[in-house]
Amino acid sequence: MIANPASFAFNIPEQHTGTSSASYSFTDDGFWEQCIYRLVSHGTSSCTKGVTIYQHGTYQHQPDGSIILSPFWQDGRIQILDPCTSSNGNQISVVNQTEHIRSWRIFDGPVLRLVGEYYTPTENMTRVDEQPELLTGVVSNIS
Image 1 (spheres, rainbow, N blue to C red):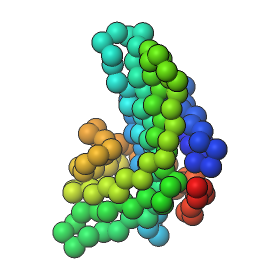
Image 2 (cartoon, rainbow, N blue to C red):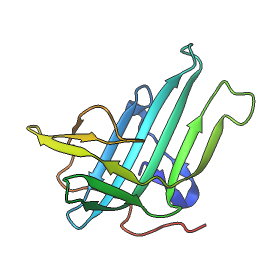
Image 3 (cartoon, rainbow, N blue to C red):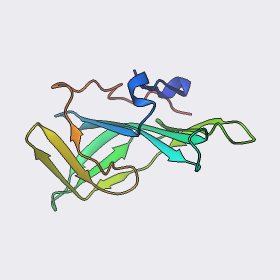
Protein backbone atom coordinates (compact mmCIF):
# COMPACT_ATOMS: atom_id res chain seq x y z
CA MET A 1 0.00 0.00 0.00
CA ILE A 2 1.42 3.38 -1.03
CA ALA A 3 -0.86 5.58 1.08
CA ASN A 4 -2.93 5.24 4.22
CA PRO A 5 -5.06 8.39 4.68
CA ALA A 6 -6.31 7.39 8.13
CA SER A 7 -2.80 7.25 9.59
CA PHE A 8 -1.30 10.04 7.45
CA ALA A 9 1.30 7.58 6.13
CA PHE A 10 3.08 7.18 2.80
CA ASN A 11 5.23 4.30 1.62
CA ILE A 12 7.00 5.13 -1.64
CA PRO A 13 8.40 1.98 -3.27
CA GLU A 14 12.20 2.06 -3.24
CA GLN A 15 12.45 1.90 -7.04
CA HIS A 16 10.54 5.21 -7.27
CA THR A 17 12.34 7.30 -4.64
CA GLY A 18 14.95 8.62 -7.09
CA THR A 19 12.59 9.81 -9.81
CA SER A 20 9.26 11.54 -10.20
CA SER A 21 6.37 9.20 -10.95
CA ALA A 22 2.59 9.11 -11.14
CA SER A 23 -0.04 6.41 -10.91
CA TYR A 24 -3.74 6.69 -11.72
CA SER A 25 -6.24 3.85 -11.35
CA PHE A 26 -9.83 3.75 -12.59
CA THR A 27 -12.58 1.18 -12.02
CA ASP A 28 -15.51 0.45 -14.32
CA ASP A 29 -17.97 1.49 -11.60
CA GLY A 30 -16.71 5.08 -11.31
CA PHE A 31 -13.91 5.14 -8.74
CA TRP A 32 -10.38 6.48 -9.19
CA GLU A 33 -7.16 6.80 -7.24
CA GLN A 34 -3.98 8.79 -7.81
CA CYS A 35 -0.57 8.73 -6.23
CA ILE A 36 1.97 11.24 -7.49
CA TYR A 37 5.58 11.57 -6.37
CA ARG A 38 7.52 14.61 -7.58
CA LEU A 39 11.10 15.59 -6.92
CA VAL A 40 11.84 19.31 -6.81
CA SER A 41 15.46 20.45 -6.91
CA HIS A 42 16.82 23.20 -4.68
CA GLY A 43 19.82 23.48 -6.98
CA THR A 44 21.91 20.83 -5.26
CA SER A 45 21.53 17.06 -5.35
CA SER A 46 21.79 16.87 -1.56
CA CYS A 47 18.77 19.16 -1.12
CA THR A 48 16.03 17.63 -3.23
CA LYS A 49 12.48 18.13 -1.99
CA GLY A 50 9.96 15.32 -2.45
CA VAL A 51 6.22 15.96 -2.81
CA THR A 52 3.78 13.04 -2.58
CA ILE A 53 0.07 13.44 -3.32
CA TYR A 54 -2.57 10.77 -2.73
CA GLN A 55 -6.28 11.16 -3.50
CA HIS A 56 -9.18 8.87 -4.36
CA GLY A 57 -12.83 9.35 -5.10
CA THR A 58 -15.34 9.14 -7.94
CA TYR A 59 -15.13 10.21 -11.58
CA GLN A 60 -17.68 11.24 -14.18
CA HIS A 61 -17.42 11.44 -17.97
CA GLN A 62 -18.60 14.81 -19.28
CA PRO A 63 -20.52 15.49 -22.53
CA ASP A 64 -17.43 17.20 -24.02
CA GLY A 65 -15.34 14.02 -23.53
CA SER A 66 -13.50 15.31 -20.47
CA ILE A 67 -13.46 13.61 -17.07
CA ILE A 68 -14.06 15.18 -13.65
CA LEU A 69 -12.16 13.54 -10.77
CA SER A 70 -13.95 14.32 -7.49
CA PRO A 71 -11.96 13.28 -4.42
CA PHE A 72 -13.49 11.99 -1.22
CA TRP A 73 -13.58 15.03 1.05
CA GLN A 74 -10.73 15.13 3.60
CA ASP A 75 -9.32 11.78 2.47
CA GLY A 76 -6.50 13.09 0.27
CA ARG A 77 -3.01 13.71 1.61
CA ILE A 78 0.00 15.72 0.50
CA GLN A 79 3.42 15.13 1.99
CA ILE A 80 6.34 17.51 1.56
CA LEU A 81 9.76 16.12 2.45
CA ASP A 82 12.36 18.88 2.55
CA PRO A 83 15.65 17.74 4.09
CA CYS A 84 17.19 21.22 3.86
CA THR A 85 14.54 23.21 5.67
CA SER A 86 15.29 24.62 9.10
CA SER A 87 11.88 23.55 10.42
CA ASN A 88 10.18 20.15 10.32
CA GLY A 89 11.35 18.55 7.06
CA ASN A 90 8.37 16.19 6.84
CA GLN A 91 4.96 17.83 6.60
CA ILE A 92 1.74 15.94 5.82
CA SER A 93 -1.61 17.64 5.44
CA VAL A 94 -5.06 17.15 3.91
CA VAL A 95 -5.55 17.87 0.21
CA ASN A 96 -8.88 17.96 -1.61
CA GLN A 97 -8.39 18.99 -5.24
CA THR A 98 -11.06 18.24 -7.84
CA GLU A 99 -9.36 17.69 -11.16
CA HIS A 100 -10.64 18.33 -14.66
CA ILE A 101 -9.03 16.00 -17.21
CA ARG A 102 -9.59 18.02 -20.40
CA SER A 103 -8.65 15.17 -22.70
CA TRP A 104 -7.43 11.60 -22.49
CA ARG A 105 -6.37 8.88 -24.86
CA ILE A 106 -5.42 5.22 -24.69
CA PHE A 107 -2.60 4.11 -27.00
CA ASP A 108 -1.28 0.63 -27.81
CA GLY A 109 0.69 -0.91 -24.99
CA PRO A 110 -1.73 0.04 -23.44
CA VAL A 111 -0.57 3.53 -22.58
CA LEU A 112 -2.78 6.21 -21.00
CA ARG A 113 -2.26 9.90 -21.71
CA LEU A 114 -4.10 12.41 -19.48
CA VAL A 115 -4.17 16.14 -20.18
CA GLY A 116 -5.51 18.24 -17.34
CA GLU A 117 -4.51 20.69 -14.68
CA TYR A 118 -3.07 20.66 -11.17
CA TYR A 119 -1.53 17.25 -10.49
CA THR A 120 -2.08 15.56 -13.85
CA PRO A 121 1.16 13.96 -15.04
CA THR A 122 2.75 15.23 -18.22
CA GLU A 123 4.18 11.85 -19.19
CA ASN A 124 2.39 8.84 -20.64
CA MET A 125 1.50 6.06 -18.19
CA THR A 126 1.80 2.37 -19.01
CA ARG A 127 -0.77 -0.02 -17.56
CA VAL A 128 0.75 -2.27 -14.93
CA ASP A 129 -2.27 -4.36 -13.83
CA GLU A 130 -5.47 -5.46 -15.55
CA GLN A 131 -7.48 -5.01 -12.34
CA PRO A 132 -6.96 -1.77 -10.38
CA GLU A 133 -5.96 -2.23 -6.74
CA LEU A 134 -7.48 0.83 -5.14
CA LEU A 135 -7.13 1.53 -1.45
CA THR A 136 -10.90 1.63 -1.01
CA GLY A 137 -14.05 2.86 -2.67
CA VAL A 138 -15.25 4.60 0.48
CA VAL A 139 -14.08 7.48 2.63
CA SER A 140 -11.59 6.19 5.16
CA ASN A 141 -10.97 9.29 7.28
CA ILE A 142 -13.34 12.08 8.25
CA SER A 143 -11.54 14.64 10.40
